[in-house]
Length: 282
Image (cartoon, rainbow, N blue to C red; front, side, top):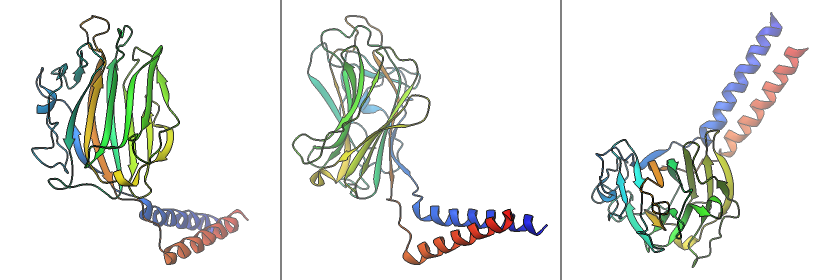
């Protein structure tokens, strides 16, 4: 009976101490921008609704329509001949600061994009590329990711503004020209450590592609830039080259470091829990 009681006490002590440790590290996320593309069919990009809690301006919408981008009426954003058959890039911007004209300069920002499907089996002469970026006040990319045709497949990678002191991400991932299911991409920017990381989830949980440095001069983020380039009509076909289910941004404070007194209590408690477990085992 005493052995069982000691074992129960050890487990309870361990659970309590784990909760204490996590209470300082846990950081609640807030969705500050969110496009679900649930509008009627043929709704242009700049009139799609943003339901995030931190948007500013006129509902935090994209500022312009891009030719070839429109909703399909079933909750998806279709990207068709967005490059108009040419190699030029077309871009739209959306603000999400905490107040009109404001910036986010602390904590961790995460940019998520879920690609529902794609088909680039005949990409034509101008290969398509989709890019989403965190932008600071002067339109420089704090960090961005690109998803586009490269060689015989699709490549996913990330980088920063080429004119700053940040560094491009060394890692990347490759996918087939024809999708086999949804893909969610996450771009994290830590505005305290001045770093960013890229992750993707193809159905088995998020896989990390590494971290790199952010330029300190671009660490005040206030908007997104969505860019498309190339030919999305698959060499003359009229079906959709790329479909997006959702784009959203979350913000969270940087995880807190336990105070010295809490750390000492944690270490002492862990020692107590270990002693109780050894006693229970005997």
